[in-house]
Length: 313
Image 1: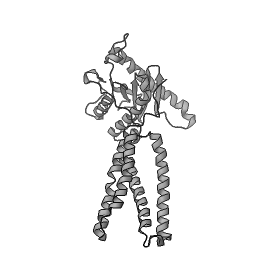
Image 2: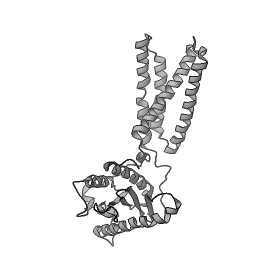
Image 3: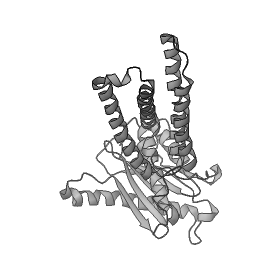
Image 4: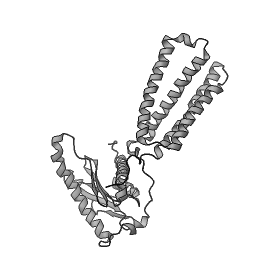
């Protein structure tokens, strides 16, 4: 059984990125203050600018230093959006129905205005975060890994199937770069022949780290182990096609992911695309990284789909 803690994994880089976006959004109210000073012939309001910098700066600093878990962030985000919507609605009501409050009452105006400004800046930062940074494949942040030395990576393209002058090369390079000392140790791509898309999938290439001393098996050479995984990959692809009709009565759609959690690591199956049918078979040899390897394969799947010009699955 894996000892990886799924609640502790997504806790690293997302909060730093969000903190950076939130901190950079401080420039917005400063720009607004400068425009108000220029267009309204009013002096620059250092008080409003200072409050914005302090509040937003504290929030950004807290995110950067404490790095809350992703689940806590989801709850905090939901709470904030409820409060932001309520605050904006109250502000709109006051401006529309109780405008007398704002007459010659600078304190009320400043409080209401600053509250709305802070809510707007934070909503803007969250929107930028989700629009640009937080791809679904990057939701789960894994600890950093050690790259495998080039001389310890075996690249096995299939003669007559792998085409170096096509997207196959970019796919192979993405898979090779995904290998690591700690987690991903074998990746193979399968697809049917170009002339017969309905035919069973065949291996296009594989990359592996079986040459590493720490993962050598005494009874097998690296070459023998690689060949066994090649054969097993075809079995996994066939297993997926066998399970599909058995699961059809559930009306849940085709099987797109399969994890075989074994005593020493796990074997993964991922569907990369359906027309044409492309499949990924991957292996981790470390039982402690079954969960984190699965997360990395999700990100790798996204990269491969982008290389193929396909939308995010």
